Image (cartoon, rainbow, N blue to C red):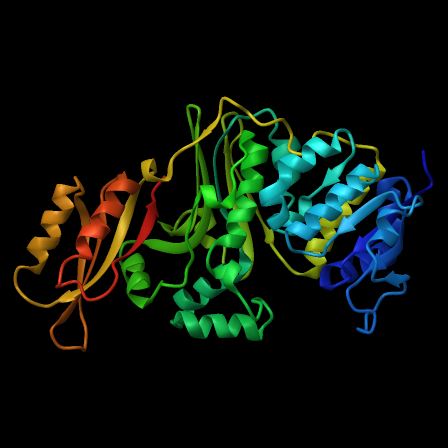
Length: 422
């Protein structure tokens, strides 16, 4: 057994600096668990003039790490997609193990990396939900199970914003500004609030659970930007919480993958995951439901996951990156065939006959109303109609919205939220 495991860190930002710090401060316990001394030999940064609280040699040249024969593992924390993918490829081609926290790169290139790697270890626990060991749970702990479904709050920023809106009656913009002020949201929060970040993570989990190679553009992804107080009031009235969920469901040989705001029963455990925390519910055919909860982001939580991968590599534990090869028997369910219940928010002219027009369009698309709430608003001659439907298809909903938008009585774009009752 080797006495040392030498690593190089590409990207010594918040997470990279935390990896270095934890390896130094928890050296004794990490060495005892790994069976070897894990040492950071050097790091690569974009700007050498930026002050960093690390004591390792730094360079701006990635080749200094990839071509260093003494470095056993490359830790990629640079972010981005294309450049990071090229770095990952070169790392594996140079027969070095790879540890990455880069969910965006893996969302597009996970299967290509698996093919290149062969028996070379790739660790990516930190790519999904930081401090929650969900990757190891799916690869190892639940490996005897067919995964029937998976539902997750996979983005702490969006969950924090929704928590502020629901508990403190804040509007979306105010909640987002607070998240940015506290450091939970970036200056450009697009990927957090539009569902993109959660989509990347869901695709990684779906590969582990089902062996399906879907890309972000293949699945339904919607964000939380349009949620307002009316939606929250309706949810409260009928016993729901609103969460941005990543959802995977298996039925026969089809996998349904989607990310969007969802109304879920307030009594469900996952509905109680609040603030910046993440939570994932996994249902296996043998174990039933298991729930994973914890910090999904932050330097130390993510660094903890990176180091767990380093320890596994040090122990000599290696398995196929995604658990198994792509399954040709598994197909992605077309978006338009997805079934759900739906909540509608409509702003309409407050005059007779409008409700009849709306009901007629719903009937033509074989959609029936389950619950109904009409709100009075301060503006004259405008009514807000809030209702939920019985189970229908995404195709029927899209057709309905297209027809509703043709009505002169519809004042604003119709808005929907899917309802998860299972």
